[in-house]
Image (cartoon, rainbow, N blue to C red):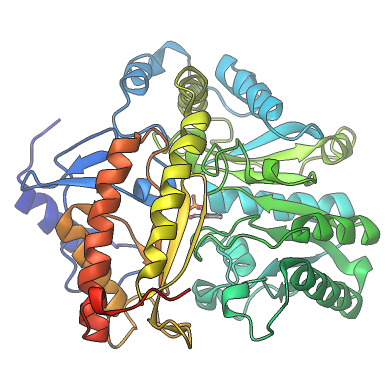
Length: 457
Ligand SMILES: Cc1ncc(COP(=O)(O)O)c(C=O)c1O
């Protein structure tokens, strides 16, 4: 490939590329000169820990030799349209259904997360003959029009006024709940009762599906209270509503199990996935559907499709990725190193600017606050994406970057989701950098040296 200087790459980007979720003027995007495993290097050859796996997808690490090798053989299988059967498409679909909960039967392939949710919406409407779709506030399901309407956080505002029949319900985000529950069970009961009431108000016979991220990722790894997801399943069963779990971010090992739902005692009707299935090396996503949903389409036309559904290259890379998961025991590593991450994060609670840490496997968020007692967030809700007048979170993420720790934030939460191949010593080294920045930042926000602050529970 033709070699371009860093300056040319950046200049061409500024002049010709529209960058997502950003004001375009003033952007000076970094250029990766190389990457390997949990690291990448910038144009000045500075090394960074990739502590968000880019956008939570480089699960098997950067430039994995087995995947680079697989790309050399892409041409061996001819390109074929969705109507053809191909070795990689059929083998991958089989493998995914085998990994999925036992009620899952077939896969519809897409090219990414939003498209997967779009197709799950359509399938839910076709199967139930109903049109309303429930989803939660503080969720992210993608940026296309249907997925944007599912999305509950403020990135959905760009698709409003939205599609009729998309209804939002509240998420148990207990750290910011105004009601002071005695325990998780009480919170679960409250949220489920509220949801039941809302289903009744909306007319149960009009509701096709409830979409949830079992553990919302972009919005700060919000772990559900005990019994909550199982309770949603029960409500869906009561009213004949399909339950769709969006595992685009949480799926393929991120939480220490293949799917986040594997931590709980229920089976959804559909699971949407993307990112980790190819570790991001090729754009692939899909919808895994239950026996019941699959059977519906045995004698009803599946009125949807994509030119690249089950694309040969993408499914080959997916298949190779899952072989790496097995050979390198990626999920075992996630749950093992995840314990170290949990310890390191729990220790951060002694800092006055750390409001809450949330973690499961290698999926974590640190929520920063101005005041630990009042839980005043660093950024008020809705003032993200460069609209924060004080730009405190931008500052924090820049300080991390300066130290060689790459990640991103949402509202007042910083995401920590390294490649699932990270080793314990690498994680500890990265977390030392993180803690050093927390210390510096605490002084900047509070004006007090850390050592003078008593740990707050
Ligand atoms: C839970 C979830 N769903 C859907 C999406 C959208 O995926 P994509 O950007 O591949 O369309 C994302 C992206 O981050 C996600 O986290």
